[in-house]
Image (tube, rainbow, N blue to C red; front, side, top):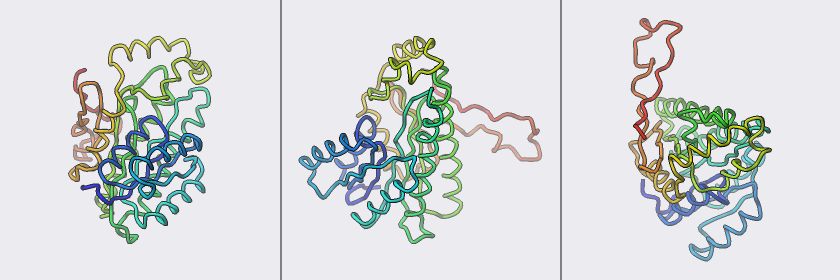
Length: 281
């Protein structure tokens, strides 16, 4: 997919990965609707992008992804401004083990809500032109981060939901690809949970384990993650793909060996799903 003239919507766009995703989309010719609950940061970003790309290439919309009304309104305003929608990135996320319901509402329910709205506007049976949805999960969506079980649960949910819906989109002829990005620890404000006792909740005593993991695997530059994001957007052969990003680069997760590939008559009711094969670190 060539991005020149395409229209994208990115949630959690004001900082961190969302900011980097928006930047790489703009550099490749797309127009971008920037959604974020942080209105001050969003307006500052919009102003800086206007200087580099021109005022007509972006729109900032204050939006809380936990609000069905606000998210619907943001999608509608994007269509009204740019006349179409080709790319949606559901990126907004938090880490807060104490306020676990809020974490689920943003990280998982927000992704579900954003994905369904994207399909509503883009799928061919509704008169759309098709497109691509990239849902941002985490390496914690492939292997549990024991210091953050709620965060882990939401990211596992994003991976499973996206893969299932990608298959549904394909067999239904929606013309919309759905892929998942699973980066390792990246240099973003999200890492503040390491020193925030409120966010750590009852697992504060395990924070040293997370710090050890960061020392072992290192921290990714947001620009590195953005390059992998761009790959998922532009490679039209990828649907239902899960791209893991580490310091060694991007690697697609192999889900080929699961119970769904075995004839149903031979699958015992207690047979567990086989875990995806991950490359050695």
